[in-house]
Length: 285
Image (cartoon, rainbow, N blue to C red; front, top):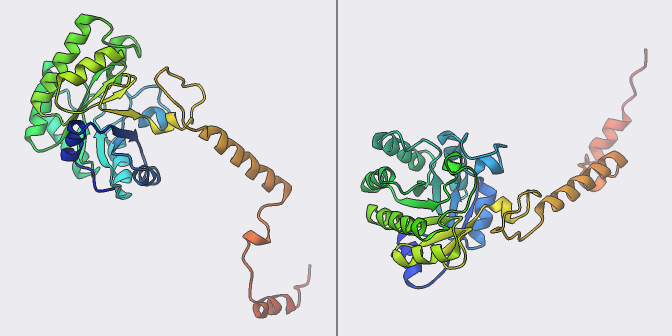
Protein backbone atom coordinates (compact mmCIF):
# COMPACT_ATOMS: atom_id res chain seq x y z
CA UNK A 1 0.00 0.00 0.00
CA UNK A 2 1.33 3.44 -0.93
CA UNK A 3 1.79 5.95 1.87
CA UNK A 4 -1.57 7.47 2.87
CA UNK A 5 -1.96 11.27 2.84
CA UNK A 6 -4.68 13.83 3.51
CA UNK A 7 -5.06 14.30 -0.25
CA UNK A 8 -5.64 10.60 -0.81
CA UNK A 9 -8.10 10.49 2.10
CA UNK A 10 -10.13 13.31 0.56
CA UNK A 11 -10.04 11.61 -2.83
CA UNK A 12 -11.42 8.38 -1.34
CA UNK A 13 -14.74 10.11 -0.65
CA UNK A 14 -14.92 11.46 -4.19
CA UNK A 15 -14.22 8.00 -5.59
CA UNK A 16 -16.69 6.29 -3.25
CA UNK A 17 -14.00 4.25 -1.49
CA UNK A 18 -14.62 3.47 2.17
CA UNK A 19 -11.97 4.63 4.66
CA UNK A 20 -10.68 2.19 7.29
CA UNK A 21 -9.45 3.64 10.59
CA UNK A 22 -8.39 1.87 13.79
CA UNK A 23 -6.61 2.93 16.95
CA UNK A 24 -3.10 1.81 17.85
CA UNK A 25 -0.80 2.75 20.71
CA UNK A 26 2.44 0.84 20.03
CA UNK A 27 4.85 -0.11 17.25
CA UNK A 28 3.86 -3.81 16.86
CA UNK A 29 0.16 -2.95 16.55
CA UNK A 30 0.89 -0.16 14.09
CA UNK A 31 2.96 -2.50 11.94
CA UNK A 32 0.16 -5.08 11.87
CA UNK A 33 -2.48 -2.47 11.00
CA UNK A 34 -0.31 -1.12 8.20
CA UNK A 35 0.30 -4.61 6.78
CA UNK A 36 -3.47 -5.23 6.89
CA UNK A 37 -4.11 -2.14 4.77
CA UNK A 38 -5.63 0.19 7.39
CA UNK A 39 -5.82 3.70 5.92
CA UNK A 40 -5.61 5.76 9.12
CA UNK A 41 -4.16 4.94 12.53
CA UNK A 42 -5.64 7.03 15.32
CA UNK A 43 -3.47 7.28 18.41
CA UNK A 44 -6.49 8.05 20.50
CA UNK A 45 -6.92 9.40 23.99
CA UNK A 46 -8.76 6.09 24.33
CA UNK A 47 -5.32 4.87 25.39
CA UNK A 48 -6.56 5.92 28.83
CA UNK A 49 -9.35 3.32 28.85
CA UNK A 50 -7.56 0.70 26.76
CA UNK A 51 -4.07 0.63 28.29
CA UNK A 52 -3.72 2.97 31.26
CA UNK A 53 -6.63 1.76 33.39
CA UNK A 54 -8.64 4.99 33.49
CA UNK A 55 -12.44 4.96 33.47
CA UNK A 56 -12.62 7.79 30.94
CA UNK A 57 -10.36 9.79 28.64
CA UNK A 58 -10.34 12.82 30.95
CA UNK A 59 -7.13 11.95 32.90
CA UNK A 60 -5.08 11.37 29.73
CA UNK A 61 -2.24 13.89 29.36
CA UNK A 62 -0.68 15.31 26.23
CA UNK A 63 2.57 13.54 27.15
CA UNK A 64 0.72 10.20 27.21
CA UNK A 65 -0.53 10.53 23.65
CA UNK A 66 2.79 11.93 22.40
CA UNK A 67 4.61 8.94 23.94
CA UNK A 68 2.34 6.40 22.27
CA UNK A 69 2.17 8.33 19.00
CA UNK A 70 5.95 8.29 18.73
CA UNK A 71 5.93 4.52 19.31
CA UNK A 72 3.41 4.07 16.48
CA UNK A 73 5.47 6.29 14.17
CA UNK A 74 8.63 4.27 14.81
CA UNK A 75 6.92 1.32 13.09
CA UNK A 76 6.92 3.44 9.92
CA UNK A 77 3.43 2.39 8.87
CA UNK A 78 2.00 3.28 5.48
CA UNK A 79 -1.16 4.26 7.34
CA UNK A 80 -1.73 7.96 8.02
CA UNK A 81 -1.07 8.78 11.70
CA UNK A 82 -3.46 11.04 13.63
CA UNK A 83 -2.70 12.08 17.20
CA UNK A 84 -5.69 12.76 19.47
CA UNK A 85 -5.54 16.02 21.40
CA UNK A 86 -6.44 15.22 25.04
CA UNK A 87 -8.82 17.03 27.37
CA UNK A 88 -8.12 20.77 27.82
CA UNK A 89 -4.99 20.78 25.66
CA UNK A 90 -6.55 23.08 23.05
CA UNK A 91 -9.43 24.94 24.75
CA UNK A 92 -7.66 27.49 26.93
CA UNK A 93 -6.48 29.65 24.05
CA UNK A 94 -5.48 29.53 20.41
CA UNK A 95 -1.87 29.96 21.49
CA UNK A 96 -2.11 26.91 23.76
CA UNK A 97 -3.66 24.87 20.94
CA UNK A 98 -0.95 25.86 18.47
CA UNK A 99 1.80 24.99 20.94
CA UNK A 100 0.35 21.62 21.89
CA UNK A 101 -0.65 20.59 18.37
CA UNK A 102 2.85 21.39 17.15
CA UNK A 103 4.25 19.14 19.90
CA UNK A 104 2.08 16.28 18.64
CA UNK A 105 3.77 16.57 15.24
CA UNK A 106 7.31 17.43 16.38
CA UNK A 107 7.62 15.07 19.35
CA UNK A 108 4.98 12.47 18.55
CA UNK A 109 5.67 12.32 14.79
CA UNK A 110 1.93 12.50 14.07
CA UNK A 111 0.87 13.72 10.64
CA UNK A 112 -2.35 15.33 11.86
CA UNK A 113 -4.25 15.99 15.07
CA UNK A 114 -7.84 15.25 16.04
CA UNK A 115 -9.79 17.94 17.90
CA UNK A 116 -13.18 17.29 19.51
CA UNK A 117 -16.13 19.64 19.27
CA UNK A 118 -17.94 21.95 16.87
CA UNK A 119 -18.72 25.06 18.88
CA UNK A 120 -17.73 28.47 17.44
CA UNK A 121 -14.78 28.58 19.85
CA UNK A 122 -13.50 25.22 18.66
CA UNK A 123 -14.03 26.18 15.01
CA UNK A 124 -11.92 29.30 15.55
CA UNK A 125 -9.15 27.21 17.11
CA UNK A 126 -9.30 24.62 14.33
CA UNK A 127 -8.91 27.33 11.69
CA UNK A 128 -5.86 28.74 13.45
CA UNK A 129 -4.25 25.30 13.69
CA UNK A 130 -4.97 24.54 10.03
CA UNK A 131 -3.66 27.97 9.00
CA UNK A 132 -0.45 27.10 10.85
CA UNK A 133 0.01 24.12 8.54
CA UNK A 134 -1.20 21.37 10.86
CA UNK A 135 -3.85 19.04 9.37
CA UNK A 136 -6.89 18.61 11.62
CA UNK A 137 -9.48 15.84 11.84
CA UNK A 138 -12.71 17.06 13.42
CA UNK A 139 -14.98 15.12 15.80
CA UNK A 140 -18.66 15.78 16.50
CA UNK A 141 -21.64 13.97 17.99
CA UNK A 142 -20.71 12.25 21.23
CA UNK A 143 -17.37 13.76 22.18
CA UNK A 144 -15.96 11.63 25.04
CA UNK A 145 -14.07 14.52 26.61
CA UNK A 146 -17.48 16.14 27.29
CA UNK A 147 -18.93 13.00 28.88
CA UNK A 148 -19.74 14.81 32.14
CA UNK A 149 -21.51 17.58 30.24
CA UNK A 150 -23.59 15.03 28.32
CA UNK A 151 -24.39 13.10 31.49
CA UNK A 152 -22.82 9.89 30.18
CA UNK A 153 -22.15 8.20 26.87
CA UNK A 154 -25.47 9.13 25.29
CA UNK A 155 -26.52 9.02 21.64
CA UNK A 156 -26.55 12.52 20.14
CA UNK A 157 -28.63 13.94 17.28
CA UNK A 158 -31.83 12.04 18.07
CA UNK A 159 -34.07 14.96 17.06
CA UNK A 160 -34.41 17.01 13.89
CA UNK A 161 -33.15 20.14 15.68
CA UNK A 162 -30.15 18.31 17.14
CA UNK A 163 -29.31 16.90 13.71
CA UNK A 164 -29.50 20.35 12.14
CA UNK A 165 -27.07 21.60 14.77
CA UNK A 166 -24.63 18.77 13.97
CA UNK A 167 -24.91 19.53 10.25
CA UNK A 168 -24.08 23.17 10.96
CA UNK A 169 -21.09 22.14 13.08
CA UNK A 170 -19.84 19.85 10.32
CA UNK A 171 -20.12 22.58 7.71
CA UNK A 172 -18.38 25.15 9.88
CA UNK A 173 -15.55 22.72 10.61
CA UNK A 174 -15.21 22.05 6.88
CA UNK A 175 -14.94 25.80 6.26
CA UNK A 176 -12.28 25.96 8.99
CA UNK A 177 -10.24 23.44 7.01
CA UNK A 178 -10.59 19.98 8.61
CA UNK A 179 -9.67 17.25 6.13
CA UNK A 180 -12.07 14.69 7.63
CA UNK A 181 -14.63 14.36 10.39
CA UNK A 182 -15.38 11.70 12.99
CA UNK A 183 -19.09 11.30 13.80
CA UNK A 184 -19.66 9.40 17.02
CA UNK A 185 -22.81 7.87 18.50
CA UNK A 186 -25.56 9.40 16.39
CA UNK A 187 -28.51 7.78 14.59
CA UNK A 188 -27.67 6.50 11.10
CA UNK A 189 -30.20 8.91 9.54
CA UNK A 190 -28.43 11.88 11.14
CA UNK A 191 -24.99 10.62 10.08
CA UNK A 192 -26.24 10.19 6.50
CA UNK A 193 -27.46 13.78 6.34
CA UNK A 194 -24.22 15.09 7.86
CA UNK A 195 -22.15 13.07 5.40
CA UNK A 196 -24.16 14.38 2.45
CA UNK A 197 -23.85 17.97 3.68
CA UNK A 198 -20.05 18.16 3.43
CA UNK A 199 -17.39 17.39 0.83
CA UNK A 200 -14.89 16.09 3.39
CA UNK A 201 -14.92 12.40 4.39
CA UNK A 202 -16.85 11.40 7.48
CA UNK A 203 -15.70 8.49 9.65
CA UNK A 204 -18.30 6.93 11.89
CA UNK A 205 -18.23 5.12 15.19
CA UNK A 206 -21.68 4.12 16.32
CA UNK A 207 -23.06 6.24 13.49
CA UNK A 208 -24.36 3.61 11.09
CA UNK A 209 -23.37 2.54 7.56
CA UNK A 210 -23.68 5.81 5.63
CA UNK A 211 -20.43 7.47 6.69
CA UNK A 212 -17.47 7.50 4.30
CA UNK A 213 -15.45 5.33 6.65
CA UNK A 214 -15.45 3.61 10.03
CA UNK A 215 -13.27 3.58 13.14
CA UNK A 216 -13.12 1.26 16.14
CA UNK A 217 -10.78 0.91 19.08
CA UNK A 218 -8.44 -1.97 18.20
CA UNK A 219 -8.65 -3.72 21.57
CA UNK A 220 -12.46 -3.50 21.51
CA UNK A 221 -12.85 -5.14 18.11
CA UNK A 222 -10.32 -7.82 19.09
CA UNK A 223 -12.30 -8.68 22.22
CA UNK A 224 -9.74 -7.77 24.87
CA UNK A 225 -12.44 -6.53 27.25
CA UNK A 226 -15.21 -8.98 28.15
CA UNK A 227 -17.62 -6.49 29.73
CA UNK A 228 -17.52 -3.77 27.05
CA UNK A 229 -20.41 -4.59 24.71
CA UNK A 230 -21.88 -1.43 23.15
CA UNK A 231 -24.42 -1.90 20.36
CA UNK A 232 -22.12 -0.42 17.71
CA UNK A 233 -19.22 -2.80 18.39
CA UNK A 234 -18.54 -5.90 16.32
CA UNK A 235 -15.93 -8.20 17.83
CA UNK A 236 -13.74 -9.84 15.20
CA UNK A 237 -11.77 -12.02 17.63
CA UNK A 238 -11.69 -13.18 21.24
CA UNK A 239 -8.12 -12.22 21.97
CA UNK A 240 -8.72 -12.19 25.72
CA UNK A 241 -9.46 -15.94 25.65
CA UNK A 242 -6.48 -16.62 23.39
CA UNK A 243 -4.10 -14.76 25.72
CA UNK A 244 -5.63 -16.26 28.86
CA UNK A 245 -5.34 -19.81 27.49
CA UNK A 246 -1.75 -19.24 26.37
CA UNK A 247 -0.73 -17.86 29.77
CA UNK A 248 -2.53 -20.70 31.55
CA UNK A 249 -0.68 -23.27 29.41
CA UNK A 250 2.63 -21.56 30.11
CA UNK A 251 1.97 -21.54 33.86
CA UNK A 252 1.11 -25.27 33.79
CA UNK A 253 4.28 -26.12 31.87
CA UNK A 254 6.46 -24.19 34.32
CA UNK A 255 4.82 -25.76 37.37
CA UNK A 256 5.04 -29.25 35.91
CA UNK A 257 8.66 -28.82 34.86
CA UNK A 258 8.00 -29.36 31.16
CA UNK A 259 9.21 -25.89 30.20
CA UNK A 260 11.93 -25.15 29.45
CA UNK A 261 12.93 -28.46 27.87
CA UNK A 262 16.27 -29.23 26.25
CA UNK A 263 14.71 -27.95 23.03
CA UNK A 264 14.59 -24.49 24.60
CA UNK A 265 18.01 -24.70 26.31
CA UNK A 266 21.58 -23.90 25.25
CA UNK A 267 24.46 -26.39 25.45
CA UNK A 268 28.25 -26.24 25.74
CA UNK A 269 30.50 -27.83 23.17
CA UNK A 270 31.50 -31.40 24.02
CA UNK A 271 35.06 -30.23 24.72
CA UNK A 272 34.02 -27.56 27.19
CA UNK A 273 31.45 -29.84 28.78
CA UNK A 274 34.16 -32.48 29.30
CA UNK A 275 36.50 -29.93 30.84
CA UNK A 276 33.77 -28.71 33.18
CA UNK A 277 32.65 -32.14 34.37
CA UNK A 278 36.21 -33.54 34.39
CA UNK A 279 37.28 -31.21 37.15
CA UNK A 280 37.56 -32.55 40.66
CA UNK A 281 34.59 -31.58 42.75
CA UNK A 282 35.34 -29.18 45.61
CA UNK A 283 35.34 -30.82 49.00
CA UNK A 284 32.43 -30.11 51.29
CA UNK A 285 33.19 -28.61 54.65
